[in-house]
Amino acid sequence: MMKVYIDKRVHYQIESFYENALLLHEALDEITIKKKIDRLYDALGSLGIYAQIYPLARYKKEWIKLGYREFICEDFHFAYQIYTLEDGSGIVRIHDAVHSLLYQ
Image (cartoon, rainbow, N blue to C red):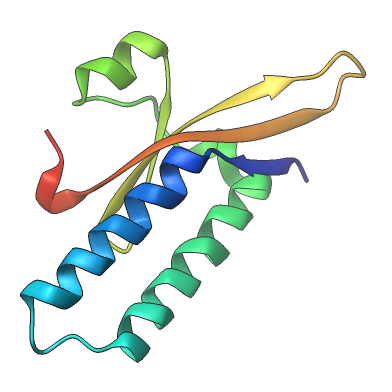
């Protein structure tokens, strides 16, 4: 299993989206949002096991240019790469995230 590193930008994208969602949608509550966020982070942690099965990004031009792979969970698209360290071990680094409603 590879270690998973999540860039600060990804944390910010998740927090920002759900903060705005709470303000815009009366039907959402903090408990629902917390459960969604917990599921997201659990799934991101599992990328250390399954990172190689997901395809290269196909739609977001910046991600394609950078050679990122794409993982989708809870309507979020995550861009990541697999790196091999000097000792031969692998890591997964998640570089970017965008919600499906904002995905372009």
